[in-house]
Image (tube, rainbow, N blue to C red; front, side, top):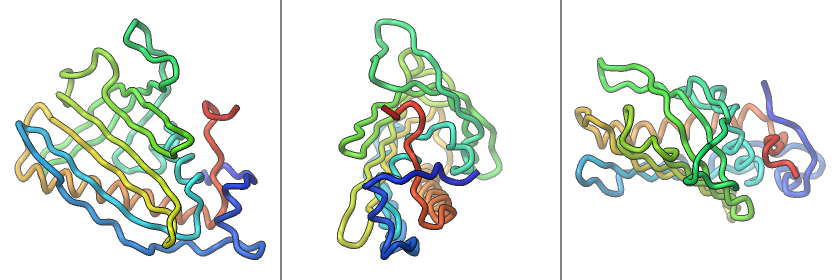
Length: 206
């Protein structure tokens, strides 16, 4: 399945003289551990890509049901209803099954996430859904994406804070590698569009 094609003004920036711009890295993925404390780890990764619009990248990142196609670690995603006083009406709630692998150990874990989308800023933040913190494979989790246009192209930043229930060997290296893999997967997905725009997912269409 390719991108959801559309023709928006924001996506015109990815075109030149009526032709699709060539997608290319101007800054390769750079990932590093920013801090670790009490079994929690925070990692930040960035890359810059030209030949694509920031809006299209953000549209993909908020197209949660497309995640299994774009990211190899995601097995399945579905949008769910949140019930209870802790729910925020403007947020999105998803149930996701992800794969994990630490050396010879591996498996899959399902969990539910609450996503705060800030469309005007092209930013989003994901955390464990109400009632899920401290349950399952993760004690705590928070991920964020920020997308912005710059002189060298579209700068994409992904930050991840994770506190697993058990600490794998060489955990800091493992989580840095995971963020790098996510960015590499995102780049492959963007390249598959061949410069075409990616439309907003259904829940964000006014």
